[in-house]
Image 1 (tube, rainbow, N blue to C red):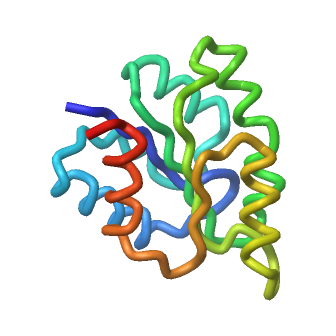
Image 2 (tube, rainbow, N blue to C red):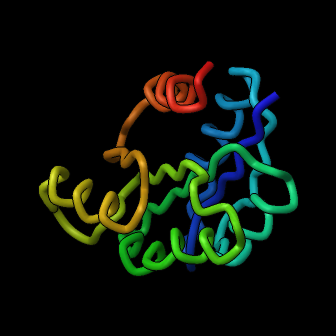
Length: 134
């Protein structure tokens, strides 16, 4: 069974979407390590290393995702898991931004997939299956 480490990064306390996603991923057959809310980059990396995770999924809903996510790929590299797939989604930036620009920004930070607000769990699950070769 593939292991997914997920959580809401930074000072964000938005828990409902996180719980919905965790439930959907479990129902899809994944071992879900849900770190909850207000998760630091170091906590994501530590949990991924400790659980031998197959993927890291980062949520942010309060608009500061760009600040909170900068350097996460580098921390993964330092921890020896530099190639782990990383997804992020939610309200990643403050205000109304062109999602194509937001996606470009987060891909440049090392995220493999970036999801707009309101993306349904089945879309993400299909991508997880594809990216993990299932």
